[in-house]
Length: 192
Length: 71
Image (tube, rainbow over all chains, first blue to last red; front, top):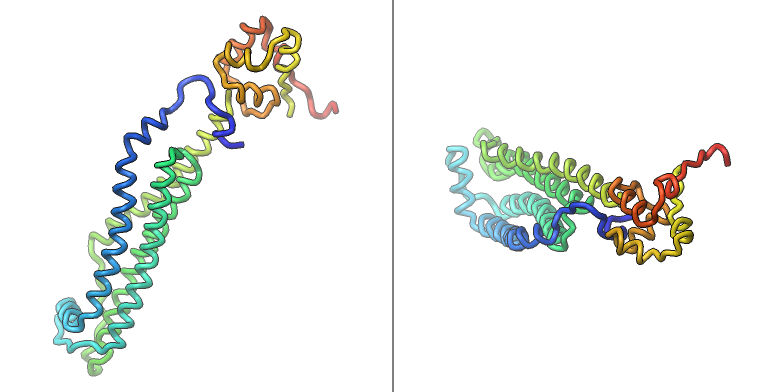
């Protein structure tokens, strides 16, 4: 039995409409910004890997080695790895879209919203971890055309990576809390 | 369910319709209907008090405990 079927029980009720009015514009901004972010990242990936000289400069800077321009297949592999990671970002953004949609429909304290919130955390964390793990792989591919001894594997983890991961994991924890809260709210709605 | 809601019996005794009761106790008709059929997880003291006041009865007239093992 869901809360909507029961109607409005007596006593104080959280004013969902008021809450929706207050967060409505934020939901729209978050929704469209997330889509814009996905498009932007896709464009950045495409423009980076299509420019051989830029790839050479970037990886040369990371390793401090005199790197020559990577071959087309190497750049295609780099693009493929980044695109794979981008797909996880898209999955997280889809979850953001759905979560904001739930909020806009006034379904704020409901299990569905908590599930979408958890998916944001899971897909976001997966994207971040994959990004960190793929950096050494990409760097190795970028130096495969170099003579033996000049090849490298660059392991790069920055404080920002860990901070983002921390926030995403906090999102997963929050989603579990929200799910419990939603179940409590549903129970509460069944008391007349 | 061990707790039986006898609201429909009391309504019949008082010759009162669900709609009227709902209006007088400040519940929606849907909620009164769910309460009558026992499809709720609980009832607030506040609601029980209003029902008793309107129907001029005791909580025991509305709620009854029936041991499942007796059946």
